[in-house]
Image (cartoon, rainbow, N blue to C red; front, side):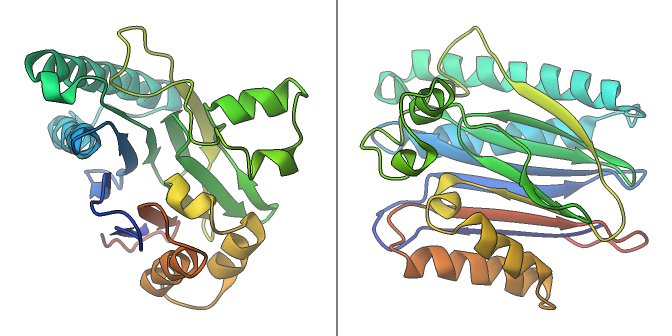
Length: 250
């Protein structure tokens, strides 16, 4: 399984509160993670970093008993629950971090399937023989307005409250995370990203980049360059996974 991770501050923000990574494990298991932090005084950076570090630590400690999608969901649930508690506890102990939180989208991939967990508006897309599609659903005020029919999908693109989340990691003890398992086969791509990419690069443009003959590294760099050329107002984070049995790089 080939993989690449890239993150960029963008052209406007003073700090990068995004974080992410790709972590390999035994039995050809791979974990990809993207987190987009939020909160004043750079607390978003702390929340996203705690999330990535927590996911990586738990992954390195995993006992390789992830043999089915159900196992993957249970591992993700317990790990994310612990990270949520850690972020809440950190905020209690450090008043300057009060209100911090982060989005999370993560994909636990094997040679046959990927189990995806998401909370917030960082996204996962799948490119396979059926085309290019968004796997996750945004947990945002604007998406709720679209679902209820109050505004159109086109209106959502320029809505003034587009960045208001309805769910995030580290903001509430009651945690509601979406889980979904999809088939992952040779030649397929997964794209995980923060909204710094999805707000600036269209699905059609993402699809074209993934279908190009370029290396994974160049694909990721191209996507970040496109987001910056379209304004770059936000931090931009990209993970691309390519199902390619017998090869592995991070």
